[in-house]
Image (spheres, rainbow, N blue to C red):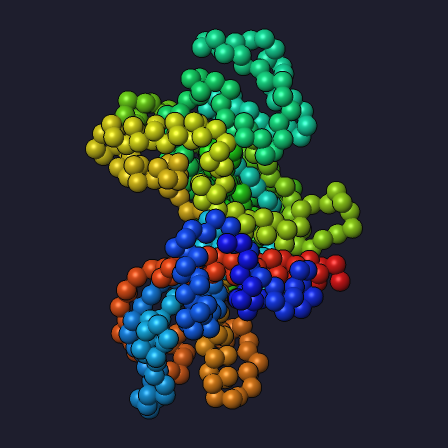
Length: 497
């Protein structure tokens, strides 16, 4: 079943969108008999419009949460019940709520919202906005990449150059050639796989990945110490002259190990409001040098795991610290642009191990890495620091946050979500009452809940997750994909204009 001509309204784009027509069909591949039958029943059974409305309200989430219950909105001052809501009044007797999953492989629709919020959060720390003053754009800003060390030679894409020609005809102790004369493309399935799987240190890889979050924590501490000493103040008094702020994401390399990308900003003295101007003598180039020094110094002596002595863990030798400007200039060799970097970081904040590491690329490599993690977890000793390693096999041993920031880098994701929820509620109430949508200030939208004039009292029960049929899920995914394509087209059109 490839064409469904009877459902043009699901995720329909605006006129002018390439391929748009009043009867633009949705394309479906790989639908089984049960899904085809479910779709027919929706269309001919008279429930499609109700489902489409419910799906639209959760943004075509792939796995919405189903709740039953009711709530009332009460005026705080008078105690008067101003409105009531019950799931009984919904067409299917349940209230659907977005799953909110950040991973694009799980829910494309919710992942897009997470990426957009992450972009706005990171962008605000570059150019201001969303309650962050514009003066932050004048503070030194550096785009930093920290990599993992080598655990053995792997195939690599080198921009058209041969992979490992310098090793000539040398062989390893397992009688395998350590040279590779191919010029791998970026999508070559061999990229990231070991030259010799027997030489590759899978145990060291797994242990480093397990402690990568600790290395990042120590890096932030070491960086503050480096800055303090460079500025001639005691470590504990750095806040009196400067503060370090950052937004960081983790990305899997093709070999299955994470590296960290971060936007690092240096602000002035610590204040209640934050975002003070940085000392005039500190430039992005100076800050980049401090970050590189800290990355070279930081280390962690990992405890042994299942008889494997990991030794002293460090970041890899490849450290990239590049200056970032808030706005684009005319010089193509100028520093990176903050908004571009923000988009790059937001993209990787929605990725997981399964998204970034192609399962076809050296599946034996990833299978062996997972088996190593399982073996380490099974033979670990109580109290050695690896208690939960077995629960993180699906993330190839990485247990850290994929997206994090310092407290005063910018606005929080929670504040952005609260602002969106309030805007949607006000828009709904205005439409219901026939009133014009008021002009809203962002500061009002992110105000504390205590400032609300109404109180919501409700009782809800969880009854399940996901759509009722495979056909509903396929429709939601198709509509979400169409909406994504339309948004991308609209953004490109606006950029060209």
